[in-house]
Length: 95
Image (cartoon, rainbow, N blue to C red; front, side, top):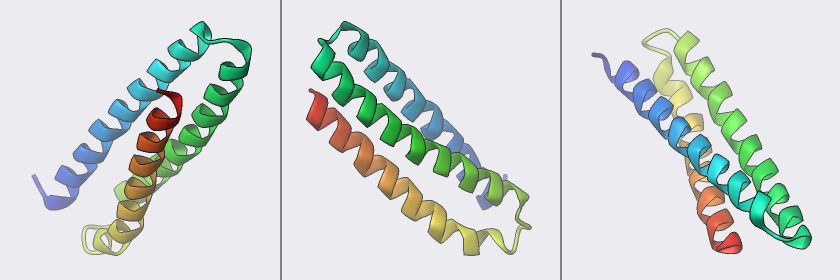
């Protein structure tokens, strides 16, 4: 397995984990009061944007040739960091 393939698989696994976390937030939102539901939905919408960005970057990486994927990796790493921070912040705000 190439470094590119390993990195793609790592991203795919993390995206699945983040989606599961977003789904947990959705479930919590359903049980929360009306005001809290609004806060949950705002956080979920923000997280979804970050996740969608990560999916787009992963697709871009998949299409890149082996030599060019390292150029794309920097942007993917930044998006990863942004998503990780947003997820941690959301859990802190809503816990």
